[in-house]
Image (cartoon, rainbow over all chains, first blue to last red; front, side, top):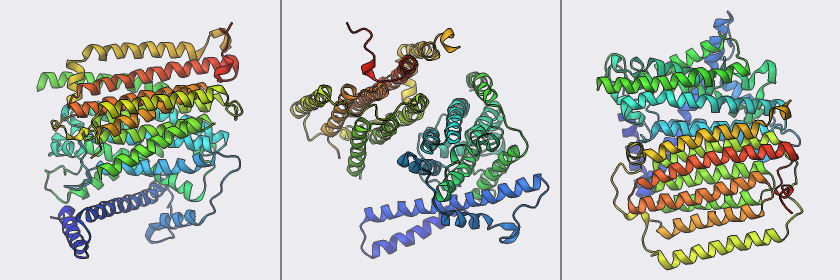
Length: 350
Length: 171
Length: 100
């Protein structure tokens, strides 16, 4: 009941029949199907991101005893859409003496890389575009492109603050990627697979969620993921009080919007990975068939996004030297310890 | 479908490799190399080497290329170093590259039957999967694997000594 | 389906471009990148023949090439930095201290 897979299959069957009737070949129908899937996925994710931007403003307002956006729509719910329209209409200012191709492609790469992750995410029962059997590795691989995008943005802007922000960001993301990847290894060791669909399928029941067997792994992952998304307390790359706005300083209009949306998307991605690997993905805590699966998925994911926002409005920013020291001297040894303990646990109990 | 993907990936790889060589500015070369690596990863996927394709992106594009980008950006090289000195070496390089290409194509023409394609061979379904490679790595090829770890350790020490410089120079 | 020879030819082209790059580039960083290009051409041949013979052990070799490439890049780039610190340039023509 309320599962979307059946509905999607019905609609697609209808469209495919229609396309076949007007004389398109099977291969072309397949291709159109892929295009539709991509468009729908893009639409859903874009809506989620627009919602997240509004939500962040509301959450921050509540935490500071303000109201936040109230004017546009009910409690300002379409404020983000209005903002997005404004950004799209704004003049796209290109600074002088920049490396134009690099300046231009940086937001595109960051944005596309942030979206490409969702190909292998199980949104609900049967709601997965491609259940790759290297799913976890695929997500890690795609997110590494973000670093290149940020460095390009820093370099391509011909601005010292942008360059410093890009450097900081790249150093931070590369450093925290190591404990992040190692912390996911614990789950992979237990589940014996890298396919996200299978990992979710194994967690059918509240006490089968991998967080209970990997508490240390989850904590390391969550800290590293916060750093990967450049969120406070790790928001040094765009520390507005030190670096103006870091690598986005010279971007305006549409390109700025792309960076901005990619940042929120990365936040959502971190929550999605946390939910999928550690908190049972679309499984409800009361057994696999309680309520619509996609609703559980989004509920859990939004909870973790809320935690990230909570962090942002609670913690002060770290210093650069503290930041790197923490990754290499605390998180990395802990991640190795976690792998060792997981191995011992598997050896003893299985 | 497979053929289209191969031709696009191969074309992109060759174009980006050419771009890498002709670009005067190192930063453009680094980014071209990233494109080459990505296109090759697509071709690896077609040859059912999923794990290697993922590693190609994570290690090469994600780590090695970021290192290159860092160095290029930190050194603040003067522009136009490359211009105005295309002498004997230039033609020699092109000649040698052409000769190597010619030689390899002749060898391929003579010894590789043109009708066969690598996808035709039957393979097990888990070919190139993480599990299979992991098992091989830790069973059959454990010694080389451990040796690479020592290599990396030496590299860390060496890179640190070389890049950090002597103490009196630093101060 | 793509014949075997196409993969080998692609690899040959990339290798040839790597050789050209090593010889004509006067910039140490570009020189290192051309070496990476050649390593990748070799990797492509390995992967192609791994698929052809159905032998996953070849993938291990590629894995080790990755590690060696990472080590090479790290040491090579630290050498570049060391050279830059002394000479304020990364032009290979400047490095002629050993020339008689």
